[in-house]
Amino acid sequence: MNSHSTAAVLTARRIAVSFVATVSAVGVTAPLAAADPLVVPNGAGQHAPRTPSVAHEILFTDATVTQQKDGSFTVSWKAPGVGSVTVYADGRPVAHGGSKATVTVRGLPAADRQWFRLVPDRGDPLTLADRSLHLEGAANFRDAGGYRTTDGRWVKMGVLYRTNSLHALTDADLGKLQRLGIRTDFDLRTPGERAKNPDRVPAGARYVVADVIGQNDPGELPPTPEASVQKQLEGYRWVVSRPSAISAYHALFGYAADPGSYGLAYHCESGKDRTGWASAALLTALGVDRDTVMRDYLASNDYLAADNAAKLAEQPPEVAARLKPILDTRAEYLNAAFDEVKARFGSFDGYLRDGLGLSARDLARLREALLTD
Figure (tube, rainbow, N blue to C red):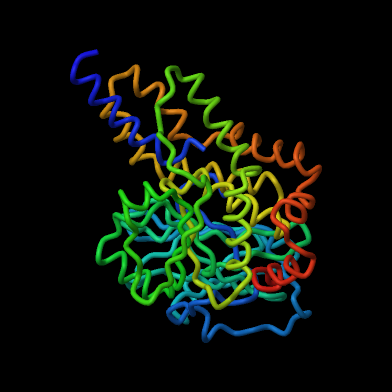
């Protein structure tokens, strides 16, 4: 092997150490129902008229906000049974439509995060934002909430965030996170990862370590693409059954149920594998359907597309082919974790109860904190 190839493999190994253990588009978010986000939007909906409605009658079945590159926002919604919807931002109406519509909003002032309040002519409004926080140093930092549950409730937005590691945050990123109220940085990485890429923590935030893998992984890049896939599948089984993983996710569920921890950002290195299972487990426990959970998981491919393309471009083709399965999120990976849940614990409820050791009271507290109806 020549020196160039040796260096390339070493680089790939360093990348692989990150974890060998939806919405379907970048910037799309599902709605938060009636309750406002934890951090009050900059005037969004504060002066919006409220039509008397049946208590907690949430009529929206879907809604998204996408921030475009030119600074405009595309807002879409479906609210069967209503006559019209008015969209508010910064306390003023900015768009109007029927029970199903897509509108473009331009000319809004700059904000750390632009919130929109969708007010129907009857029923409760939705408050939502673009899912991504658009951080320069953490491309996969995004809201973990805003999804509808199977019983018609909604996971709150502006409370939990999933992200890749925070070591590359800029000063501007840190300022934004502080203003948005990030109070807890929950790190799922190994000691080696934390030492190599220590997080930059927003001022005033608590830093919590919960190592999922439980040891420093050598991160050897497998010899073939097929072997890389198998190593990923093994890693996803580990996140369900490994004692260190069970301990880490038990701790995360405890913090997620505690409003004093909000806003809570949890992460691994790339924010897709250990973090991917964290989000999948939390959303499933809250009652979000499997298809939505999968879309949220696979969205990391979009958020990390530029970073992953750059990493692959640095490698010789043969090495890139072996590395790509490590960088991807794939449905078969997450399905391997859910299959392990069934094999080990019989059901997801069994995983929560017998694996993570969560009582009915623990889960009720989690749902009370994170769901709005």
